[in-house]
Image (cartoon, rainbow, N blue to C red; front, side, top):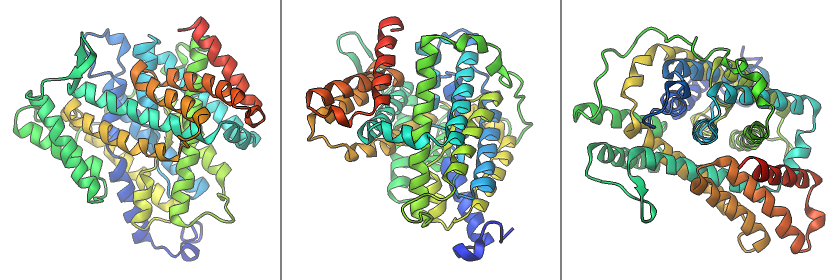
Length: 440
């Protein structure tokens, strides 16, 4: 085992790898409760049951998909990178696709499945670098920041901090209600933990908020902490129920969005974690193909199980900071996700007041990419800004991407930088114009 993971070469031990894997798990364990709440649209009242995914089944799918992805990453790519259903992509799945486009969640899962298959083919074919290079870095950064604003807006809305307003569309909610006050407390305590660099700050913040909620009777106390594993039957294999419905312009845009965000989120996360762990050699990421394959295979497995896109988590950097250097840490994280399956009774205490602070803080982390955009160049600033602002204002990640990708060729051509535009960008321009003409 030590030889397989190159413990001696990388200067690590079982203890360091276990602590690193545990730290990563605690840093991303919030997804076990946020993902079921989001995909079941628990915060949206008066929806038909058919539009809601079963939260217990999603909980199991989340844990198992995370375990599979982390295990593949650890054993095949040998990186200390853990995977789970991605924040941002789950919001797109639930609020843009299911709620906004009125697409059945079964069909949306089929879209996730297809995007994973395409990702695998791109990885095996070796053309992923071409696609990565085709899309300008500024738009990649803009997409990440826009999703961060979108997630934060979802959190503020779910908590009741931001509400609809007839005069101004949105406005400040009643800050004296119990749910809002509990959310504000959650944000404050999580911010304190994050500023103090406490490992697993988001997860700990959720726990503390839930405890206060139970003490103040804002949240019902669960009957048990450990219980039987919920049935995954309501979501398992549902991706194939409406598979024939994916051949539409709407679903083409959905699949492209799943693929695009996962593609670049994964690449960015792998480079960030590998850099921190000192694993980059000659400015290249060793075993990059294996890492991308593990990520795409986890997406396919997650779709079959019943969850949105599974992707690499930047929270893995917390594990690296704690000492993780090899894939053994990811194996440890995978085991902890499987162990978490027995804590499903805690789902009942994860209300919007508990999840909203997590969404808000994750949004803060995601908008850090704003600093990478060259705002002094107007031809870059316009498509980047429109991508970012359109996501929360239209309540659609796909619409934000579409607007930005339409304006980018226009501003670059007018500026006289036509030669810098990759042909793939022209193809995407046409796709998104057709999207607005025939879909929106």
